[in-house]
Image 1 (cartoon, rainbow, N blue to C red):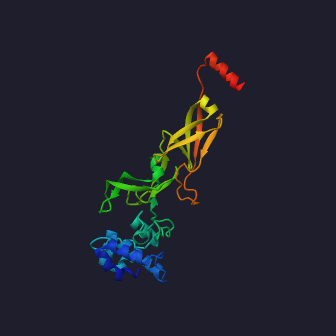
Image 2 (image 1 turned 90 degrees about the vertical axis):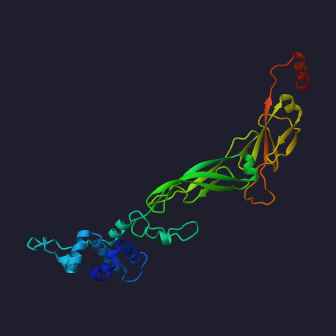
Image 3 (image 1 turned 90 degrees about the horizontal axis):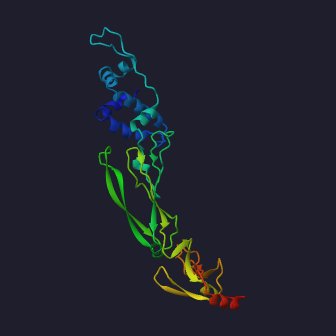
Length: 313
């Protein structure tokens, strides 16, 4: 353990910060110099001795030779000698026990969202921080909000680590969602690392999933809108006009000249939902489909029945 002598005086005053600095400096995953692995092992051995009160006391009094060969056990030196110290040789075990679940390289490499992200798996999984599972929440919007686009402010409460690095507290935060016109149901808006913080975990992603609120007039299917018009049987047979208030408050007056049978639908081009990221500049909106609910009369007078027979039969 030749490193103890020159290194020990540096470590004894502040063992943990010194070990952290030296172990990170000479760790084989970061330091590719030929002597780095040996140096890394020597640093671990020095810390293994100096972090143990009994081993350190022997080393301070009898030096490296006394530590390794053993010393008399007792003040008068007449009792049996202690067993000599032998380093177990697993520098990675010392490293892992020192850092625990913390990612020791986080200050250099634990960055995301397009920046450098090396992760920490070089020590065969030792010290790897696990990220919590994504937290998913539904975000219900009216069709008008989706048609025009909108801004939503979502208040969340999460656990945040305090400056001491050990305790935590619950704090509120406002997340801003900018909804683009035409976003489809199922669109996911992800906020990275906005979940609860913990000393040994990576905060979870918070994911909002867009959902359509039920609407009084329309149903959305992809980029198209479905409108159901209720008409009388006579209108179905003789024609009618269907008035529809659009999502942007215009009024459409759609003439229906065909005979309306079961399953008939009227297609109105470019009166549907706005298309998000349209591929064709000539097609910026979906279409409007008018479905029909035909109301039959509950009863007919003999005279009306006769007229219908004369007209249709």
